[in-house]
Length: 343
Image (cartoon, rainbow, N blue to C red; front, side, top):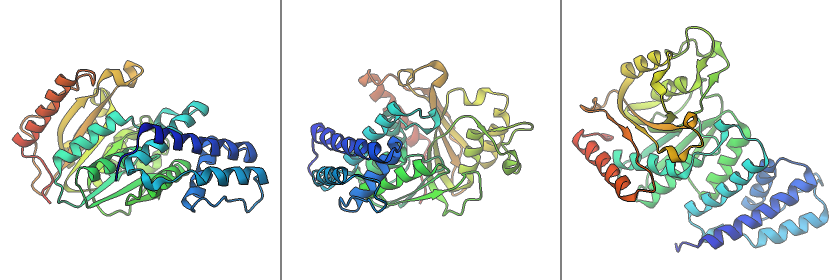
C-alpha cells in the first residue's frame, strides 16, 4: 500500500472534525461522544444514524456529504491511528482531560515497541496485554509498528473501566483492522484472560480508591489507599506467562517512596527487574511529570536475572547520534544477557 502524505491525513481529519462539530451542535454532546457517533457512522459505510430524530435534515444531508469524501482504504493502519490521534488531541483542547486519561506520546510508544521488537522474534505469536488501555493509542501504535516490521501473529487485549475511552479504543481498532479484544472492567478485579507473553502499559499514577478490593494484593498499603501503579504492576505480572516481559511507563523515582518497599519485594518474588531507563526530560512539562521505562520479566520458562541491570537515561531525541548509540547499547545488552521470549 502506498503511503499517503500528511496533507491527506490532515484533509481527512478536517472532514471528521467538521462532522463532529455538526453532531455536537445538534445533539449537544461532548466532543468525544460526537466523535463516537461520527465514527460509528463511518464504520456503517457512511450511513448517518438518526433514528431518534436528534439531527436536523440539513445536518443529516451535510454529514452524508462529508462521509462520501472519507475513504480509509487508502490509508495504512498507522496513518488511520494518526488521524484518530489528531481527533483526540483536539478533544483535550476542548475538554478538561485528567492526566491519567491522556494519550501516551508517540515518541514513548516508539521506544516501548523497540523493546518489544528486541525481546521477541518475528516468528512468535504475541499476546499483548494493556491493563490501562484507555483510548488504545499505545497498544495500537505498538501493534501497528510490529506488524509493519514483519510480526504477523499479533493479538492484543486491553482492559479499562472507562466506557468512553474504551469505545474510542474499539472504533480505532476496527478502523485499523487490528486483532484486539477490549474488556470493560476494573483492572483490579478478577481477570479471566489468556496469559499474555508481553504486557505494555502507561500506568496511571495515584491512589486506588476501593481498599477492600485489593487487600489480597501484596503491594497494597498497610494503611489508607494503595498506589494504583503498584497494584497494576502486581496484577500485570500475575497475568503474564512464565518468562514473559512487562514494559511499563512509570513515574520517575518509582522506587524512592516509602511504599516502594512492598513493590520491590513483590517484583523480586514474582520476577526480575531487568532495566529502568529514564525518558528524556524534554518530553515532559515539568520535573514532577517525568517518567521512566521499567522492564520486568516474570520468573519461569528459562527466565533469569540479568547479570547487569540496565540503568540509565535516554539521551535527547534531538541528538540523533547519541540517541542511536544508546539504542545500540540496549541491543548489545539484550544480546549479552541472552534476554528474550523462549517461545
